[in-house]
Length: 279
Length: 275
Image (cartoon, rainbow over the protein chains, first blue to last red):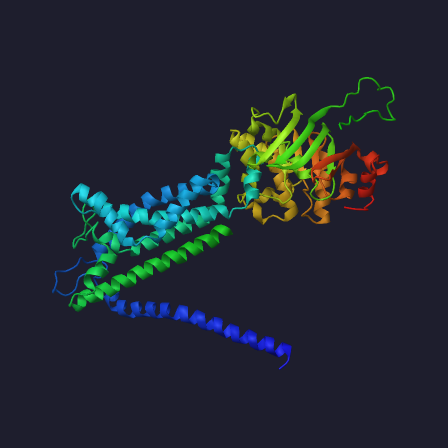
């Protein structure tokens, strides 16, 4: 076989190999999603799933209304804590943090990213639940906020680093002080990446279970007061997955499907937002 | 070496005694270092008011480094160090006490690649005046005036709210110029402003410069010798010495530099023997 033929053959072999690897990575994810879809659809389509509260064990029917509200409140409060702080630290790291102080912040942030989420749960328990004397949604929000912080921080820093230096120079050459250049020129230019980071962190927090287990405990009833224990979708999955009642198992699958949908929709919205902001 | 330029002309021989040329920026014995590396060696240059002064020389000879001293842009580099002085209206610009913000409003800069902010055309030009606290009416006025001064007004007056990034390269560069003019500087520094533009856009920038020099002092760094000879009143030729530091070789009226260069090295560069 001549040189050209050998090269073409090698090209085809490697391309096939790469495609096979992509399949190997994508197919299990795909199967998982389909599985959750099929198992969760009956529960989601059951009338009353979205609007009803859970029924006592053994009584058919019921829904996850309280869990949906709970997830929204808990993640909402966590975001209110994590997004402003994470964004500001990210801005600091990018614009004023090219030094040892910045490096240590980055290091700590990276370590936090790898921490098992149950550690955040224990943290929330020790700091807030034990001291306050009761379980509460707000302790879950605090644990989730600490979990979200490094994600938002890194996404913000990355988005800002990507802003070309020529923009900073242009602003400074006009006689703008550094804080103006940072807040009025650089940050608006990076807002797409910052928002995406925040949305992705929120989506991740919505799906976390371990930090919620012994901070908010859960609640069978609708609870709007963040100072009291509150239900959440991930807790519903945890509690109902192993009980021997089919209606509750269906609800567990349906709650899982709902979480998958929330995360997917958030991701898509984030991408659409970035695309629109870039135009 | 510091060169005074004689203002005597053939048409007015009567003006002999009183002609001290109006020096806008007076750089004296500038030595510039990045940590231990010396980038500029003993450069002195007197920039005349309301004239165009061109800095020419081969790549790496320190022209841009020297230009950026005038508006203290080297402050952004932690390892940069300068000795010498640059006098603007009697005050040494390199003095640590200098109000750098004020300085940069008086001495504006146009960069090699157009760097409009990712905002609307209006917001780009209005950025400086708004920062200075001008009223909406005053801002409107200066935006229109600056865009007219750079020849952009007719092209963009119907789409001031659209993003500046949709303009062509030449329009963006003119927008950056309008943005710089809006803070009403005295001096405009231009770092190879047309190097990324096509010949037509380049010509427009050069025409603009001729218009602008009536009111502003312009210093331009350019690789393009033809541009320097077309556009400038005075030319400074720089070269890297043995220690790789930039030096000023020759400075004088453009006509003299290009037709009667005093230094061999200037002549070699002009005639293209090296570059």
